[in-house]
Length: 408
Image (cartoon, rainbow, N blue to C red; front, top):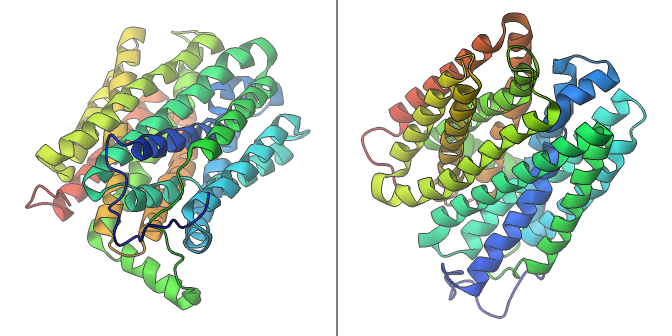
């Protein structure tokens, strides 16, 4: 976990695809993804059980997700500056360790306010992972393979989120949501330990000079005013918000008539994440042939088409649509998250942090607000609203990145 190595960062191009270092980078970050995303969404598979046990509404139960993602969103930028000083790996280790401890306390929360407070703190600790992981990839992997590595990392995060939800669903059905939260936290603890064992030493990192508040603002303002980066931040906000809203409230729909599914079966909807595991890597590979913009637009079109199928009151059509929707979302996300590092030539950690800030703000705000639409007007209002968000994103992306294949 040291920050430097004997080799000069100017004479080493990074871990190449196929090397042992490349495999260790991807394995370690996949484990970090498990620890991060299993914890972040640990209550999502048991929201109906939580709502019933605590006598709260669906939207109130979803606050356990929204407050965690808000906590993550407000700390991704501070964590990026910490990582610039102490190193990417050390910052990720501190964040993942703190989050694991907090996650183990969540099942012991005596009241709803304490529960939500712990979830917010857990999210704040997890802010030290997603953006820093992308910056670490851009520094430690050869440039030609960074898009593929980013896609592989996103694929790993889908497995992490899936693992947490698949653990939580059956455990929650048998022993309640508190036991489910504990089981996910134990999974995250094991993953965090394995991450620390596998992650390679940093070889291209050098501590950034202290910028001061004004310097930090200049860096952030430069990224925010870059139209190409801004379009990616808008994409992250709208698409992630819609994605989380769908998964937050589809469980409630499947519990109700005409479906009437039990919690264990509803938790299996998260197997749709496997389509994202495949599509994120597949989309990253396609960018070299068709360009990032075109692949991103295709991902948005696919997720919108899939969500349209969930409007049918047919279980097979709904589940098939969810699989297509999920695959399309992760294809778009893998392209967008990796693209920030390619566009930003300086302040990459901050550029990636702004993407993640937008991503998790969308998760928090739209993920919660979708519940208001669902409770007031039903599933069609939520699904059509999310499709509208996707079309808005596609229009902005096409306008700003139009006229070229936008490969870089």
